[in-house]
Length: 145
View 1 (cartoon, rainbow, N blue to C red):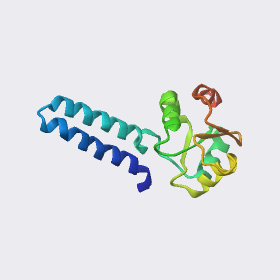
View 2 (view 1 turned 90 degrees about the vertical axis):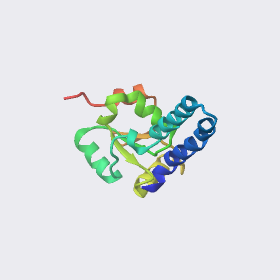
View 3 (view 1 turned 180 degrees about the vertical axis):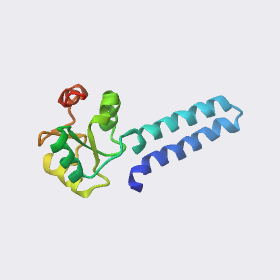
View 4 (view 1 turned 180 degrees about the horizontal axis):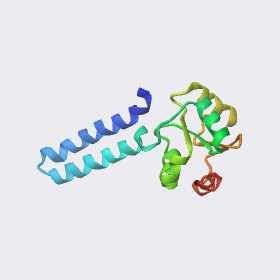
């Protein structure tokens, strides 16, 4: 759980450190802009951007019932962030599994990627797909009810 927050916390701390220089020099606007930029980066890299993750077994069970793909991801992964942002609201229709929270999920990703924990790995109908294009993923979603 804490591992997912390391990068966002470091970004906030670095933003505070970088913003103190301009703040002490009287450039409060520059300091505020720098701090805001680091806060946005921290937010994008935090687990808050993604739907609430579930365990690998639960995701596979749900996927078998509703036909929705399972996304194995980890916080801080720029490709996972790109997928999440490009999917927009459709991201909520996927089952998200954080491989840093679930050792079984990390093992499933390693098995699908020749020992590498490459994410995002999307499982559609039992077949893994590593870092697919967001439009392809959107096309794999069952029709909205």
